[in-house]
Image 1 (cartoon, helix red, strand yellow):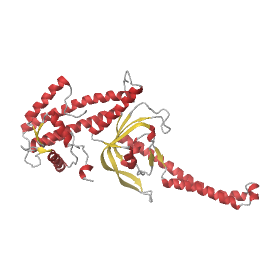
Image 2 (cartoon, one colour):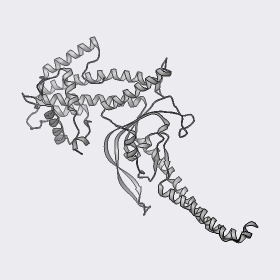
Image 3 (cartoon, one colour):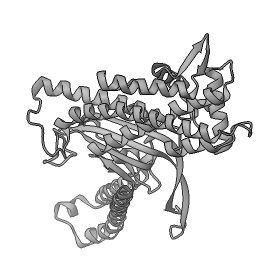
Image 4 (cartoon, helix red, strand yellow):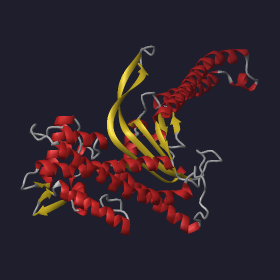
Length: 414
């Protein structure tokens, strides 16, 4: 698979750090430093961009809060008039649609059920596998951002007293949104009216199913074979032993000889079966404990807090894209400007070389935002940035329009 398909759109640099980097670094050619006046002017422009994007997302926060209020299990106070019937069903569908759009803006990837089942195939490093009850949900969506690797401690399969560090593929961020329905896997008092949101970090990919309620730990195939073999052996042995005794002895009742002949092997076989079952139960309890301890530190946010965090991430991403697009056109494109491909390559290559970060810059999205704001002009297939002073005047006029008509359109939050 081509490298650019593996890289994500997420720009892994904080906005304030990015502004400082752009102002103080010498540029790709090492002789393109900003003067003191240029630094002052660009920092002012950057503050205006940050303010415009934030204002746009403030309206988005209000819309999301209103959409989620009727389904928020932690809402305080509750809505005065919660939707019912068909109106509630429509509000639920709108909430999920809005959340999926939000995740796209925050550069998260959607995991379909088919993909999740492929990812979840097999047991975790703790030796257990889980079964997800998909029919326990009216609706459920799972998203991730960032693929990496983490380490887990496990014991050697043969030398069980030895601990070892193993590397496991992880999702840097994982988010789930779901609405439960009455199901035997869930508690009788499970909340089936609310919509739950969960955000986690550094989740092993094979254990993504542990983020959903109603999961059941499955006995490994080897243990099932051992337990089934023990029971089958016991039944077969008893049947064979009974067939070797005279019919008269059987009709007359169990003799001490028959009882003694059956007792010792049965104790051994059933004992082995019990040991297998008990070993699985111990593994399940250990896994449950490790899971609880792990998720305690990996849980980042819940319910409405997830929305606020994700909106903040989306806002930061929009701001980074706008700043990078404008700055590289303004400083490095020259009088002829850049094509979209040249701008894309310049940003990705320069930040990889000077900051060591790799990402797939959303050049089309960045150019669309800058065009709507009037900060760049086009000539054929080439783009040029307005000078700093003219760009600042454009942003100031957007503030005036915002005061009269509503939020500016720098960020695409529609």
